[in-house]
Length: 483
Ligand SMILES: Cc1cc2nc3c(=O)[nH]c(=O)nc-3n(C[C@H](O)[C@H](O)[C@H](O)COP(=O)(O)OP(=O)(O)OC[C@H]3O[C@@H](n4cnc5c(N)ncnc54)[C@H](O)[C@@H]3O)c2cc1C
Image 1 (tube, rainbow, N blue to C red):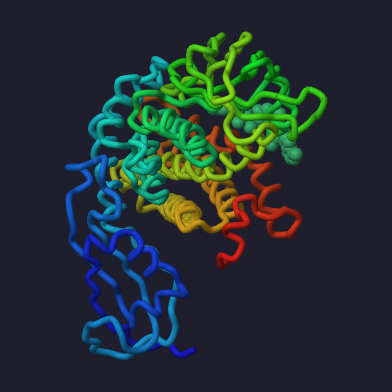
Image 2: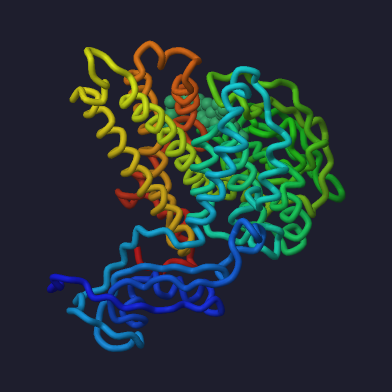
């Protein structure tokens, strides 16, 4: 394959009416050459801005796709230089819409979250009102379709939102991540039409907060060992049991809860998923944690709560499959949270290296500090690419369990390592509460634990690369999709 010495430039205008289908067609490798003859595919300036119409910014808004394409002819624009001979599917550019969402979130986070994050951390305060503000911007349902009350953006936009929120405050990041990835999305994916229209809009509009209740004292990584019972009665089930470390439970309006419907079958197959109202669970404890102090983590009990058949999500006995599929997608969000924390630490450390003087010069002039900053920037960028890639695969209905596990594995280790390096660059000040890096260090650690520990991520990756297990997100419908 020959590669042209200078890329040719072709301008295509994607009008708003072409919508997401046009963008997706152009983004798919096999179809790029059919659609275009080369060069960059650039801006089409369409409808409103995200900020102006936060709840309706799907692909009928501003579209910008950029790719390098192949072939000859077509496209309807003049070329002024040689063609590439092949189509490259790799495109690292965010669309204009994704950038808008990223900027909107960043601006909001800098203004409304960052200045308070230290105080929320010290006082262990859950910033309840903040989530109404996020809801007004559409950020409590970023990737939920507009017809269900969401903002209708894609998964890449959603991880950008989580990254920016977590860069300001990782506790806010996890609250939104659990609410969206672990509750709203599985309701959308596995719910009946009736369940979707009943449960999703209040979550997507931020009127209810969602909690995901899987973990129990004796069932963490080994979720199939859970003991919470759902005993069938005439018109549904009566649920009894205890769950631990449930994010958002104290403020939740909707709880996605996993319980054993078949007491005779041990392990995964006897478990089912239920949608409970917040008042059907009782919070027994607020966990005291190393970090993430602006989020709530609760122990809960369910004391004989009755649920009708309309509260069963998916089929009876399919609960653990739903939980694991949820975590496959959800961990991409946690990986984005880790990137946000690592980026925040890098921001503080690099600024400090320019200001702090030792031996008559800024410490940033010492090679030892330069090496640290270079390693931080490199590792954060590498992890970020894995995170965006995993989200892109999800958006394109491609298998993403392995990619999500890789993203979380690297991003969480990056956050843990690089927040430590940030403290080192700040020296003694890094160890004090005068700077936020000690908070980032404490917040980072959890990303290696929840939504699957790093050991479990390695298991997922190893099973996939060794062909020991089909990627669970590689459903029959997607079986023919290219990998
Ligand atoms: C702040 C916080 C928020 C949380 N939020 C939620 C929530 O909203 N909902 C929810 O349901 N849960 C939540 N959790 C629970 C979390 O998902 C679990 O802590 C996590 O899955 C690990 O389970 P565990 O703590 O029981 O560890 P264990 O499973 O007991 O693991 C202990 C150690 O053994 C390792 N290990 C276990 N099995 C294997 C194996 N097969 N191979 C190799 N190593 C293994 C683990 O990697 C770990 O290092 C939260 C936890 C915390 C701390």
